[in-house]
Image 1 (tube, rainbow, N blue to C red):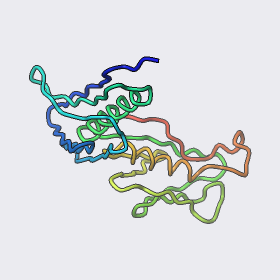
Image 2 (cartoon, one colour):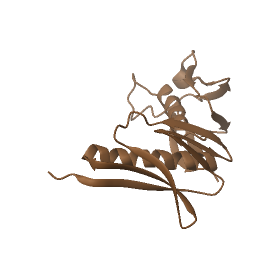
Image 3 (spheres, rainbow, N blue to C red):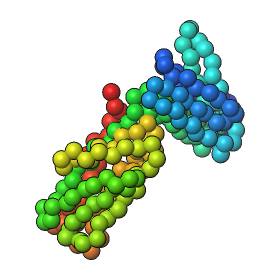
Amino acid sequence: MTKAVWVYSLVEIPEGVSIEIDGLKVKVKGPKGELEKDFSHAKGIRIRKFEKDGKNYILVETFFASRKRKALVNTIAAHIRNMITGVSKGWRYKMKIIFSHFPINVKIVGNKVEIHNFIGEKAPRIAKILPGVTVKVQGRDLIVEGIDIEKVAQTAANIEQATKIKEFDRRVFMDGIYIYEKEVMA
């Protein structure tokens, strides 16, 4: 089996976004905020900035790469792209409140989402909102927004998991709160 000598991935840095690199720690600043991520677990990977033809780039590279290292290079580049998109535009997940048996009431209380009257239960179900994420109730929709895609997605997953039905037939009781759209904010 032959190994690739040099594997790399380029990420273009848009106007209005600044990136600081300290070893394998990446800090991205933009108009919407600041994100920091530590890639120290990635041994044998190098991250650096350079300029070519008046444009700034981030180069994620490795030498003598195995399949895992090739995948790691592309994964880190994708994380950096998501960080750039987050600080320049932001992320939004849209969720729909679905019920057919009992009307569900959703309230935002501090850093929690309280789901009342879910399938007729007396006690509310609670989902945690991660820091840096905002949740809004608009009629039968929930809007989850933030700059860190991982925190936005985890908050949406927390809400979806809070309304998971275990005791009833899922084909009959489809009540719950479900993600129906993921988008970049404009």
